[in-house]
Amino acid sequence: MDTLASFQAFWWDHALLPSLAKSGSILAVNDPFYVEKFKTYFISIKVYLDRDDGTDHSEEIAMIDWLHENMQSYLNCLAKGKHQTLVHGDLTNNNIMMGVPPG
Image (cartoon, rainbow, N blue to C red; front, side, top):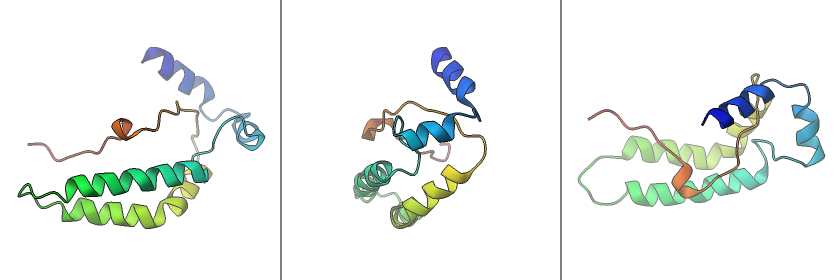
């Protein structure tokens, strides 16, 4: 964890980030690859939340539906933002975390 934190801290707002993204050496946060991966994961998460376990997940499902439809625009906003850095690219189903209310 310390190594990952040091790596991200080094690249935080680094002047070379835009040129790395344009070179194809790294994928930008709004790359179509990520958009499609997230959309696939959202479908899986929605199926999981939509199971009949007696819990109302309508708010989470509404959020997932919105993200599914607006993921490219959302990631485009993130890509234009300040305070960019590099992160590891382990984008798999078991690496996506969603917060839940305590209790």
